[in-house]
Each structure stands twice: as C-alpha cells, then as structure tokens.
Length: 69
Image (tube, rainbow, N blue to C red; front, top):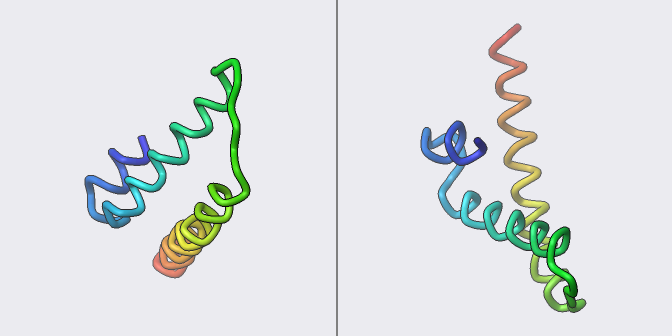
C-alpha cells in the first residue's frame, strides 16, 4: 500500500520505495526464516537511509498538517 499511495503517485521518490521494499524483505526474512544472521555492517548501512526516509515522511505529514489549517 505504501508503494501504491506514495511511490506510484510521486509523493515519495522511487529510491525510497526501493529502500522500503528492502527493509520489508529483511523484516519478513527475520520473522519467518529459521535462521537469520545480521551483521553490524548491514545494520549500519541501513541506518542513515532509514533516518532519511523517516525525515521525508515527517516532512510530508507536516506539510499536510499545514494545508489543513
């Protein structure tokens, strides 16, 4: 649904959509596979892009709140 409402409509850039899909796949793997091994390097590589995505979403929420006033 994230892709349908935010990526395909251009509200959020495709690069963020690809990153979100990667995070979703990693979470799914962690939830349902028998064994998962995450390295410190993997987590650190995901940290800044995750912060950037959160900041983008917060910006969109704030802009939406300003339009509603």
